Image (cartoon, rainbow, N blue to C red; front, side, top):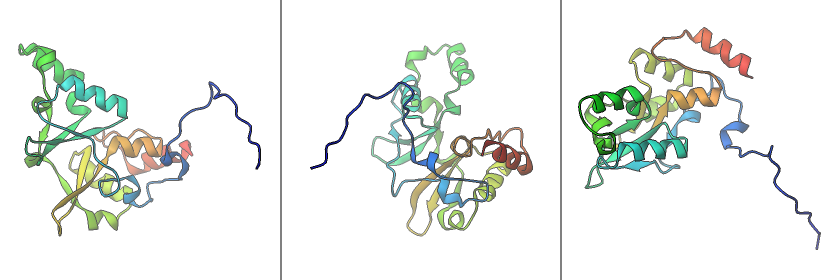
Length: 188
């Protein structure tokens, strides 16, 4: 039997994630950026969960969004980090609602307001195509739906795409794709 050496973890040793080992660009297939619920269990909350607890869940899990299920387990909506922004919380507090009483239901986007892309359409697209579509519709998050089976199949987050490409993508400012391409080129 071969003898192996055991040593201590050093301070400079850091945790890595799978996305750090792939070379991604704006031309990469959009599916490389999808949180696919066929292979990744989505993070879930109910409308009655404290908004502060949901924010802590997002921070701890490095999550951009949580799916919201009603008490029967049906998909009810989406809660994003932007939905829980300081400004939005302070609007409620200014209206007289104590911070500790705020819930996911106060901030979530109901399913009726959510935009979707069809999974087969995204399957044939680059992330550049998807980002441009999201920009045109002012969406920072977009659900992917397998319309044939009526399955909410996945989620694309602009923040997650930016993190993976190592560039900030600001949907409000409407950057040109040439600017994004230059920023991505500098990062790699």
